[in-house]
Each structure stands twice: as structure tokens, then as C-alpha cells.
Image 1 (spheres, rainbow, N blue to C red):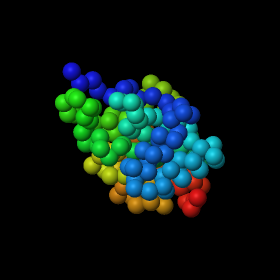
Image 2: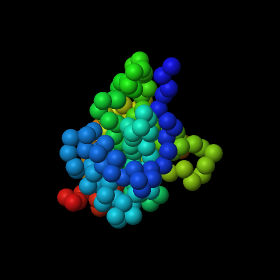
Image 3: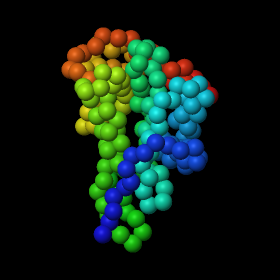
Image 4: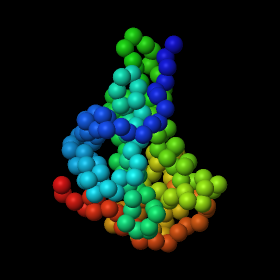
Length: 179
């Protein structure tokens, strides 16, 4: 019987090198590795989550603190090992499974942001492919009045309530850095 991936968990310091390799494999370069290092260095990284399976980390997501609006977070980067994207998990000697680890990871983060029971739930902004992120609970409609240095068609929001907030998004310095 094929077992699915482990639960989403917080990153540990001994995961850092493996996450660097995952980011490089998923994005084909070191730009996102440099972004994560800069966010950690600048103490803008709020949370980093991973999914571990079959002896390795197969998915990663970082949440960083936005400069503005105060209290909002930015989901970036999100990475899944290329060989397990689109649910193609195949452990040695076992049948192919179908677990959408990226979707599971992002959905859990978006769900936490939309929880109305917690007054302190942060709004989370993401820049990415709407076809993927809207399935995970992010909304382009709710982000329609946000001003961003990035393309509006790819900017989405997950937050408590159903309003369409008007705000200027100011990302941490690491997002505009060439480190």
C-alpha cells in the first residue's frame, strides 16, 4: 500500500540546505534561494513550511512580513520538486500515487488566513498562476483594489471576511534586491 506524504510541518535549521536544492530545482536557478536567504537575514521571514516524504523534502512555502499593509503577509516562494509536481509521487517499488502536495501546502496556509474565528488572522498576498492559487483559496476578485509593483492579473488575496480591501502593497526589501 502506498502511503501519502507527511503532514505540513515547520522548517528546521537542518532542512535549509535541502530547501535550497529544492528551490533551485523547482525554479531552475538561484534567485529564489537568494530571496529566502535575504528574507531570513532581514528577519522578514515569518514562517517556512515543508512537506517531507520518502526521505526528502518535496514541497516548501515561505511566508514573509509585508512592509504595508502592516500585519499582512506574502506567500513566496512556493516550490514543489519537479519530479513530484502534479501528483506524480512514485516511491521505489510502489505504484504511482496522486497527491497534490503543492495544493495541499498552499491550501492549508490560505485556510488559516480566511479563518474568521481568529481576529488576528493575517491577510496573505500571493503573486502567481491564478489557475493554481484560486483552487487553493486565494482570490483575484478580493485583490482587485490592491496597488502592487507586480501585475494585478497575477495578484491574489486570502483573508478573513469577504471585503475587497483598498491598499498599497509594499513588499520586503528582499523582493527588489539583486542579492
